[in-house]
Image 1: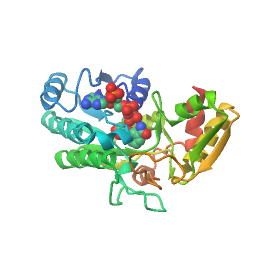
Image 2: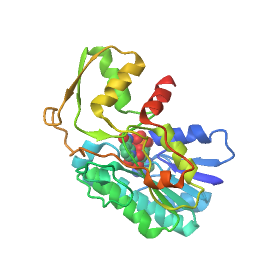
Image 3: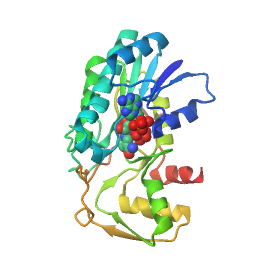
Length: 279
Ligand SMILES: NC(=O)c1ccc[n+]([C@@H]2O[C@H](COP(=O)([O-])OP(=O)(O)OC[C@H]3O[C@@H](n4cnc5c(N)ncnc54)[C@H](OP(=O)(O)O)[C@@H]3O)[C@@H](O)[C@H]2O)c1
């Protein structure tokens, strides 16, 4: 990878990639919606043809899961059409592409971790539009990496920051204890992406930190590591004020493809959280 175009560069993953690439000899073309709206094919074609990156990492997305339910048209454009536009032009300029996707492509009904070979069955607008994006990329390109991640936190709005902010004004927080996943730091995901991107081992990858937690366990660990003394109360999804989009109860992803290659293993979620809070 000599010249990489990053879309959605102001988001959590975009920022983490920039931090890792800052001192490298890779030329970075940073774009967010102001410079490149991925929903606009003409704009995508103009910029990519002019700048000619050899690699495109699509970090742009409509990530507000509940809002996607009421803003389905926009969600479809950003999560479905956007990746299709990027893949269309990537093919024209012979670039490889990384499409970042989500655990929400699965139903969440399983009780063992999902592998890359399991059949997707999204339950929300966010999940189905992200799956549409995956399918567009896979049908247009040969040289693609689809990387599904989950419970992402980095430099942006996320669960870790929300917990720490709420703790400033409350002495008790209720957190759901029957939804399981793998909290993943944007920095760890960025490292994983940069590791696979020049491997030539194309296809679908799961890229989450190792280990499993409920939101409640995740919250308890955040407070323990941050030295915050607060009463964290576990509740069921049923007891929690209803969210608009259906959340998968079990959205643990197994990094089967990555781990079978054996050259990079993502940190355990607790170690990645320690690193994040230390910084
Ligand atoms: N966050 C999670 O928990 C999570 C979980 C699983 C998978 N993922 C996936 O991981 C990837 C990175 O997520 P993230 O948390 O880094 O996302 P993020 O922080 O929400 O960043 C997304 C960026 O994309 C920009 N964007 C929105 N519409 C755009 C458009 N039409 N053209 C260009 N840029 C646009 C956003 O700008 P605005 O802020 O101005 O809209 C934002 O800067 C996404 O593919 C996401 O679906 C995230």
